[in-house]
Length: 475
Image (cartoon, rainbow, N blue to C red; front, side, top):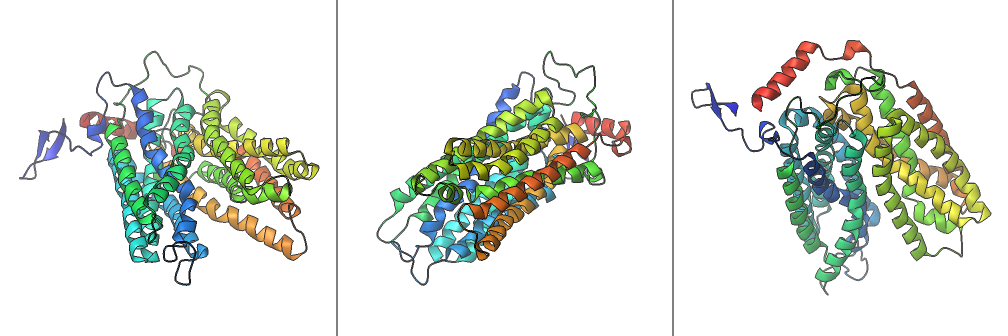
């Protein structure tokens, strides 16, 4: 029971509002293994963002149907939809952090469902009326906000349910974001083929169906989510007696975290890891065709991209789970050290004609790219405690938004410079990959500098007790 206000403005006892944080506390006997499926119900949906490119070609033929005509949208115009979505993902995750910690995961996940599903519906109207602004506002802005809220909302809850396996828990959910495109891509194509006709490319109807479907799935996830009651621990588990100096038992407030050097070092750690990975991910198909001209077809290159997606997804669970055993800092040491070596070697492997090692090298690189996303929430919990980790994670995701711009821009402009100076084919990418290796060396140094948060930033025992008492009273 919780205290609510009656008509006279006085507190009275009554049931907590359904979407309040108080209403999500788990009752005795609740299995914590029900929480990862609830998180996946959201992350598998918002992972569709990685497959949005399947709509680009049909959207460029909305009027011409079979081919683009003068009044159709250009691909450069359509490209802004995805860019806006990723930008608002980072911004919403950053600014909604405090709100998430205050209202809890259920309301945040339901809000994400409304935004992401609603974004598809507004975009459907934009396609029907041929107003590109509605696609920008729908999928780009509103959908992007849904992406950000949906991405961060289950993370802190999972970490609290799995104090013994923080990395594995976040890896399970964030793996869903990496794998969502593997469901969305064929689903989108199948729906467009079903709805297309002599007068329609089928995108409007597909957006409507997917918007409703994603809203339902994400809503189910929000209804199923639960948070552990104050003081809960897994049965039979006790915190390690020998304290790991990189895992704190204290808590740092979300605003205080921004005053620590650790936050900015971890921001750079994520930014550099993502910049290197996302910079080459978008060029993977062209890169392998240029590296092995005549022996790799466009279809084979598409298969290569699909394989990279599998390793991107699997790496999220593998590396995050491994970090529970070898530690978060050591895991990132592997990312940066092994990644720098592979980025340096890949051009040589392509030049030597060794396609098997070339593909293997890229697959490992992509696994570490995905692993970086899945490991960072547990790293933050280790450094700043679990009380505000969801909000802190949201603010750190601005590194993703920045990397989403820096990575592709870096790759494209370096390649353009190379081509302008007579360097063509695979050789035009060699300098790019070597620069990415250099970025990972910088990331290695940043990770090396990460140390335990100074005790002056920790919440006082009184503040922690007040936080626990507030939650306990609500429960």
